[in-house]
Image (tube, rainbow, N blue to C red; front, side, top):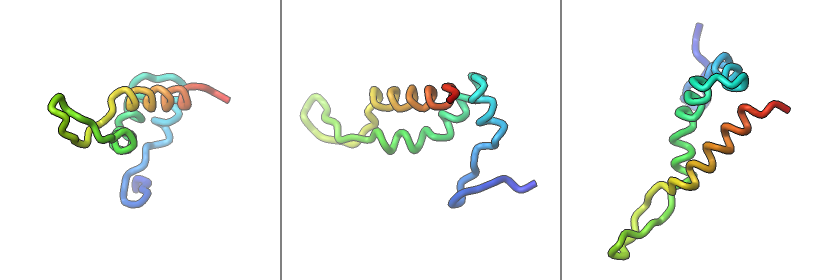
Amino acid sequence: MEEATFNGKKLLPLSVIEAARAGDPLAVNRVLRYYDHYINKLCTRVQYDKEGRSYLGVDEEMKQRLQSKLIQAIVNKP
């Protein structure tokens, strides 16, 4: 059977999503890894080092907040 894709990227299997909704920590971790690149992109900000030079970096606090919100959205049942 061919795996489902969207814009060339493999989608998460429905079984993984269902297991994550049921609270399986391994499935939740797999969902977080699937969206990790997207979350990093959302959390990329201009940051400054000690000498005042700017660089692009991932805001780790914002990333943790987004991951927490994603976990809450997965596990909370309507």
